Amino acid sequence: MPLKKLELTFPSEVLDMLSTTYQDDANLIKEAAVLELYREGKISSGKAAEILGMDRFEFIRYAGKKGIPYIRITSEELEEEVRLLEKP
Image 1 (cartoon, helix red, strand yellow):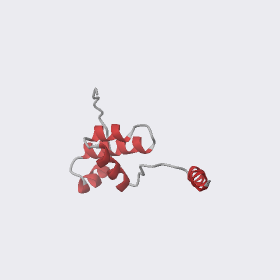
Image 2 (spheres, helix red, strand yellow):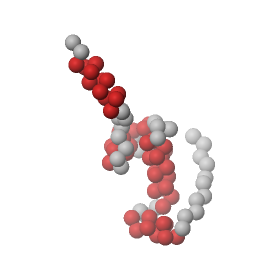
Image 3 (cartoon, rainbow, N blue to C red):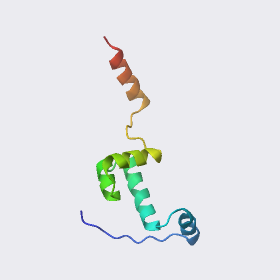
Image 4 (cartoon, rainbow, N blue to C red):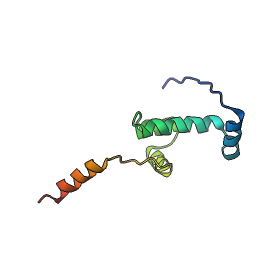
Protein backbone atom coordinates (compact mmCIF):
# COMPACT_ATOMS: atom_id res chain seq x y z
CA MET A 1 0.00 0.00 0.00
CA PRO A 2 1.41 3.43 -0.88
CA LEU A 3 2.20 5.60 2.10
CA LYS A 4 1.56 9.30 2.52
CA LYS A 5 3.09 11.49 5.15
CA LEU A 6 0.99 13.94 7.16
CA GLU A 7 2.31 16.68 9.38
CA LEU A 8 0.07 17.68 12.30
CA THR A 9 0.33 20.58 14.67
CA PHE A 10 -0.97 20.41 18.24
CA PRO A 11 -0.77 22.84 21.12
CA SER A 12 2.27 22.00 23.23
CA GLU A 13 0.11 21.21 26.28
CA VAL A 14 -1.68 18.48 24.33
CA LEU A 15 1.60 16.89 23.28
CA ASP A 16 2.91 17.25 26.83
CA MET A 17 -0.13 15.34 28.12
CA LEU A 18 0.37 12.64 25.51
CA SER A 19 4.07 12.30 26.21
CA THR A 20 3.46 11.58 29.90
CA THR A 21 1.59 8.43 28.89
CA TYR A 22 2.95 7.51 25.47
CA GLN A 23 6.48 7.42 24.17
CA ASP A 24 5.70 8.05 20.50
CA ASP A 25 3.09 10.71 19.74
CA ALA A 26 3.02 9.85 16.02
CA ASN A 27 2.10 6.21 16.65
CA LEU A 28 -0.55 7.23 19.17
CA ILE A 29 -2.20 9.55 16.65
CA LYS A 30 -1.98 6.90 13.92
CA GLU A 31 -3.58 4.36 16.25
CA ALA A 32 -6.36 6.76 17.25
CA ALA A 33 -7.14 7.52 13.60
CA VAL A 34 -7.23 3.83 12.65
CA LEU A 35 -9.43 2.96 15.65
CA GLU A 36 -11.85 5.74 14.73
CA LEU A 37 -12.03 4.65 11.09
CA TYR A 38 -12.73 1.10 12.26
CA ARG A 39 -15.34 2.27 14.78
CA GLU A 40 -17.11 4.20 12.02
CA GLY A 41 -17.06 1.10 9.78
CA LYS A 42 -14.88 2.79 7.15
CA ILE A 43 -12.16 0.13 7.32
CA SER A 44 -12.27 -3.54 8.21
CA SER A 45 -10.62 -5.15 11.21
CA GLY A 46 -8.17 -6.82 8.82
CA LYS A 47 -7.18 -3.51 7.23
CA ALA A 48 -6.89 -1.82 10.64
CA ALA A 49 -4.69 -4.65 11.89
CA GLU A 50 -2.51 -4.42 8.80
CA ILE A 51 -2.01 -0.67 9.23
CA LEU A 52 -1.10 -1.07 12.90
CA GLY A 53 1.15 -4.09 12.33
CA MET A 54 -1.01 -6.51 14.31
CA ASP A 55 -2.71 -9.74 13.39
CA ARG A 56 -6.47 -9.43 12.96
CA PHE A 57 -7.50 -11.15 16.19
CA GLU A 58 -4.98 -9.14 18.19
CA PHE A 59 -6.54 -5.97 16.76
CA ILE A 60 -10.09 -7.14 17.52
CA ARG A 61 -9.12 -7.80 21.15
CA TYR A 62 -7.31 -4.47 21.37
CA ALA A 63 -10.24 -2.54 19.87
CA GLY A 64 -12.55 -4.28 22.37
CA LYS A 65 -10.35 -3.11 25.23
CA LYS A 66 -10.71 0.41 23.82
CA GLY A 67 -14.51 0.07 23.93
CA ILE A 68 -15.06 -0.71 20.24
CA PRO A 69 -17.10 -3.92 19.88
CA TYR A 70 -16.39 -6.38 17.09
CA ILE A 71 -20.05 -7.29 16.64
CA ARG A 72 -22.22 -4.27 16.04
CA ILE A 73 -25.93 -4.86 16.17
CA THR A 74 -28.79 -2.55 17.06
CA SER A 75 -31.29 -3.50 19.73
CA GLU A 76 -33.95 -3.88 17.01
CA GLU A 77 -31.71 -6.25 15.04
CA LEU A 78 -31.01 -8.25 18.20
CA GLU A 79 -34.73 -8.51 19.01
CA GLU A 80 -35.42 -9.74 15.47
CA GLU A 81 -32.64 -12.34 15.77
CA VAL A 82 -34.10 -13.57 19.09
CA ARG A 83 -37.59 -13.77 17.53
CA LEU A 84 -36.21 -15.84 14.65
CA LEU A 85 -34.45 -18.20 17.05
CA GLU A 86 -37.59 -18.64 19.15
CA LYS A 87 -39.70 -19.75 16.14
CA PRO A 88 -40.33 -23.53 16.06
